[in-house]
Image (cartoon, rainbow, N blue to C red; front, side, top):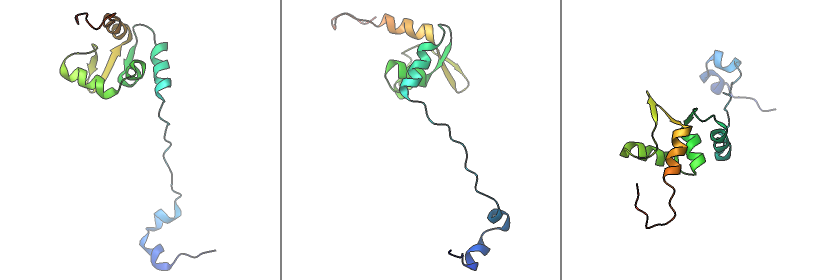
Length: 107
C-alpha cells in the first residue's frame, strides 16, 4: 500500500481530506428520437420546446433560432428567455409549406 507524503497532505485543508468527494448526478441527454416522440405525443395545444420541434422537423435548434432572429419561420411564444412553440400552429405552418413542384411560387 502506497503512503501519501506529508507535504501533500498538509496542503489539503483538513475538512476536505476527511470528506468523500460527491459527484453530481447528471441526467443523460435525450436522443433526437426520444425528443421527436415527445413532440408527437403532445396534445394539439401543448407547448413544445425548440429541442423537441427541431428533432421532429429533423433540423437543428440553431436553424429555428436563425428563423426567429430573421423574423420568419414558425410562430413562437417567448416568455423571458424561454421559447415555446404551440404544436398545432407548428404543424399548420409545416402543412402550409407543402409543394408539389419546384416551380410553385412560395406563399
